[in-house]
Image (tube, one colour):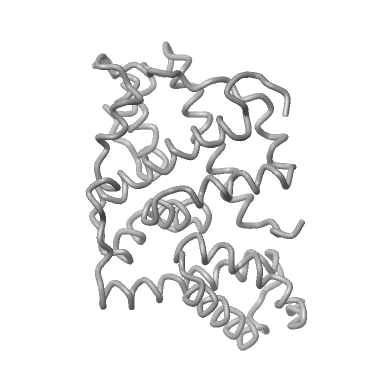
Length: 189
Length: 62
């Protein structure tokens, strides 16, 4: 079944949010979303209907964001601040013998969180609090599902940098979710 | 080789992005067999993946 063009507009806000998480710039985010919707209208008959319209649109957005990064990295390569590309600040999470200072706690019913829209608001806050490049790489990897090799290539960063940023993102996000959603202790929300 | 939790946490993260070497996989498996904290961390990393992909499919207004 071909996609209903009038339906495309209803996805604009969601696409804008994904683009913002990666680009952190409203004008650029609006541009890539606009390009995505235009490409979707032009290619509407190619929509197979097998997947959801959202999945299809996110797929197009992914390419538009990649194009944006490719252009941007030609003009100005991604600069990693020393803080973001080093793991030194994680040393405080571990004792000298490599054990956790504060062990990850049991999260009660994480699957239930996935059914609650409040949980996704918290996840979004946590993503927004990540340093810029960390959020960008994590969103490309986990929200958009892009391969690490492709991410490195597009952002012109080394595999090691990429790996450090993903580790940083995961460690920060799990601690953010523990604090803001799953509770420092088993406290009722 | 015995891993520390710090080393295990790094391997767990990179294991989500690339295939670990057989030696890395073995030492991680051995560590996870005896370390509850790292087992929880691994589950939480995997949960982050599910949550992020669910996030990309949902409508932010709902």
